[in-house]
Length: 271
Image (cartoon, rainbow, N blue to C red):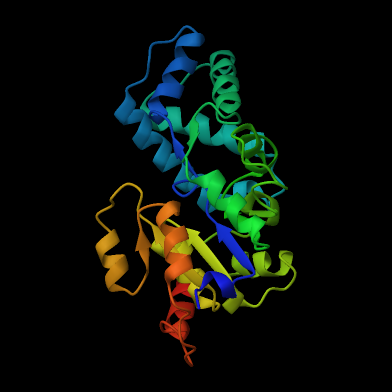
């Protein structure tokens, strides 16, 4: 009997699983700067500046400022401003306001993203079989309300519910976000649920730590994929392969602690 026949819920990550970024971060920052009459920033410096600024903001105000009740647009305004400063570009307020409005608008639309061609058929196929499909993502509200629908991934046709960190105030790799998904699906038992993502630390470990099935996608042939396999994670190239694996893979035999669930739980708690 296949694993698919035992599932009531499948949750999926977004970026790297359903969507990919188009182009580079610098493309959008460059267009915004030029539109405000400024030269194009250096791509590498801009990328590094953004990584530093985003990491700092995520540490100070996790879940896009949820606990601090910070408006999402203000969270991004601070992050983008600091990104430019760290990259060596300190615009005056009027110029930055023009630049920021363009960047915020771009990343709140479908423009910077592309949908993997197997995403929509995979999600629809699961729902046609009566399986609930949920999204679990470290993302803010615009993914739910604007970006996913604009890309043709709609609640009610491709997915049933979403757990977005900026909305619920919990983010991966905290296992609580997966528990919320089980509850939102109607208190589905963990052994009747599967999570699919592209991060061993954020997707596989916390989902397995609460007893869910999990598999990882390696769409971009990452160097870490082999270590994921050696750790016991199923690793597949895309959702088409995942569909075949779910259909053919025999249901895992129950064990007292499947795949070292207690160890995984402790790992998730420390992350």
